[in-house]
Length: 120
Ligand SMILES: [Ca+2]
Ligand SMILES: [Ca+2]
Ligand SMILES: [Ca+2]
Image 1 (cartoon, helix red, strand yellow):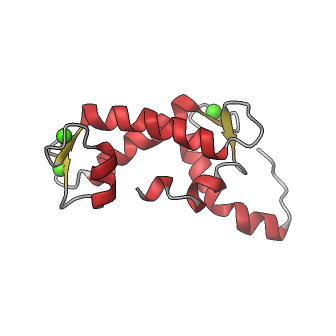
Image 2 (image 1 turned 90 degrees about the horizontal axis):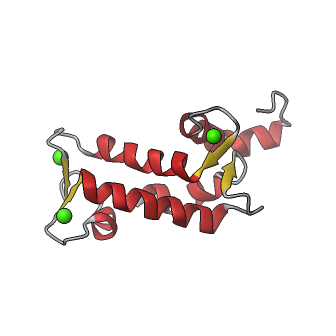
Image 3 (image 1 turned 90 degrees about the vertical axis):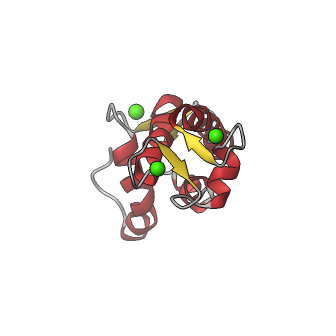
């Protein structure tokens, strides 16, 4: 983790670094596929407002249900979200891993926040 950032860079990196700080579980400055999937998996718990273990249309954006509800029964289970999380991690890497090292740096992860991945 760099300790000195230019003022402009610090501003543009703020979102990505905040995200990276939470996502980078082993603190090596790179968000791996597994760490990305863990972030998406954690989103499920945030979406599940009433903690009944499923995310319904009342709790999440219809677009999220569209992506994650594999059996089209109108609710997303934890198991369905796990599938979605690994797919989303794949997609994040495909879109944002600029240097092809199979992980996202704090800089590369800005691409996710500017893309729609975390808003789905
Ligand atoms: Ca890491
Ligand atoms: Ca729920
Ligand atoms: Ca379902």
